[in-house]
Image 1 (tube, one colour):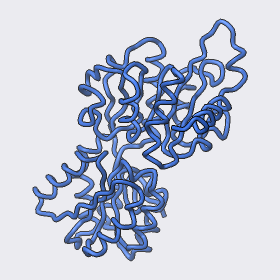
Image 2 (cartoon, rainbow, N blue to C red; image 1 turned 135 degrees about the vertical axis):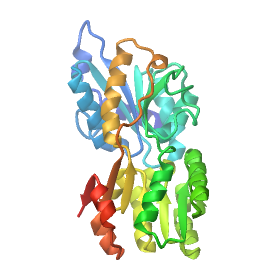
Image 3 (tube, rainbow, N blue to C red; image 1 turned 45 degrees about the vertical axis):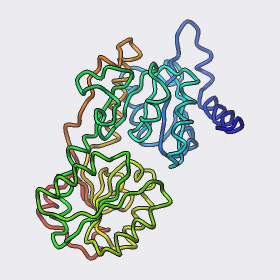
Image 4 (tube, rainbow, N blue to C red; image 1 turned 30 degrees about the vertical axis):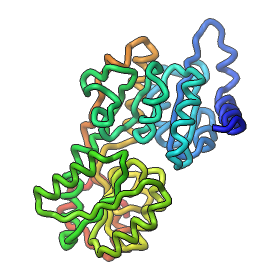
Length: 329
């Protein structure tokens, strides 16, 4: 990372700290590092910082009695949808020696490389054990703990819902990357057991997305399954490409559907950031991350966008509509 960029990013972090934090006497003001997939400017545009996930985290801290600027401040860093920035951003927060870091799944591997001492709260990770972040769900055993999305375990369910939505799809394309390898492997197992045919469309960086969709349409697939990881920061672009290709697509999170995607099945990420506050609270009070079991979701949401379905000329089966937790019209 070049010196100018590093100093600039530190300046943004300093701007995020209100004067009240420096005026406290006799009380430790905790610094909470926050990594995000979007832009840092979106994370520091208000005091306290904005964005649905961060607001959910701060709401959770408020409910636990924490006052922003009095008990804690934040050090936010955004990757701007560029995975190559993850290691540098993780290194910045480690250099600042923050008290705890909260981060989403795609950025956790970089944090694992950057620190083995600063507590890290996972605000939604696909496969914490399989990705080597914790030793086990019940006994994390290191400086990482938090919340699991259980995306690997629910892969087969997503494929079932997609086939129910588009029963005529002889081949389903799966858009995936190496960060969700185990989800792709689980999809292969589920498809083999059910006699379904999948087309693997692996992407290594965002620049390959257009080519991935060309490969899918050239193969005349009938539907698309978009896995998380690299895809999430570029969800709007992926949704546009799916619409242009006229492909009914299943996504892992409701954020895709709210942005115009067709259907999703997964845990509520904003609720996970809200729940992450309880982990931050316990860590700041002295509990070691190694002793805090990883929390798994108790509910998975089925969200359907009827407007997108109409654009695709697709009729949503009544069986799916009745089971949907939310229908966007």
